[in-house]
Length: 168
Image (cartoon, rainbow, N blue to C red; front, side, top):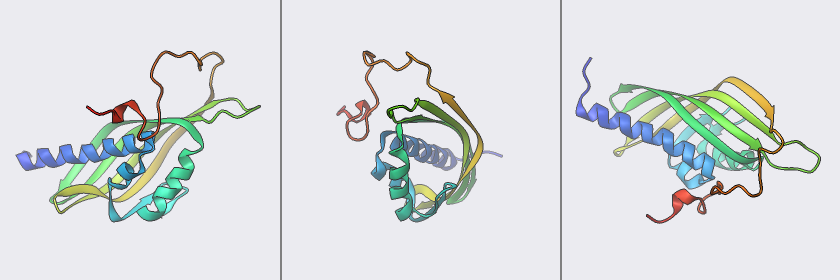
């Protein structure tokens, strides 16, 4: 089965939606996350299932529990059907708890799959329906000494202060 140039462009635009979602979540750029969905989209994130207008505030509350997150998007299988697509994305999501007195820092790592129905409306691909499938979860204590106050690297920061938002 051959692909047309339009198919290749569509696949790249769909991958861009997946990657923008990860950046939006990890940088707490909720306008960027919202832009990955059509206005009438639904998201089934396990503890939350409903429309995008409810999902964004729910996500903000969930992310407040973590000092940092990092979503690595891996295998992205795209099945095109004209202006619709079924997209399965394997991801590893890393979450570090917020430091609290008398509680150890923990890393929660999850293997998930985002199963998305995407549609192209007015020339733009976006998620119309998402279901998150949880394949596995691992919880680890953060080893003593692995978090340093004198770390010389730039630290992750939320939108709009992270390095990625610096003017080009």
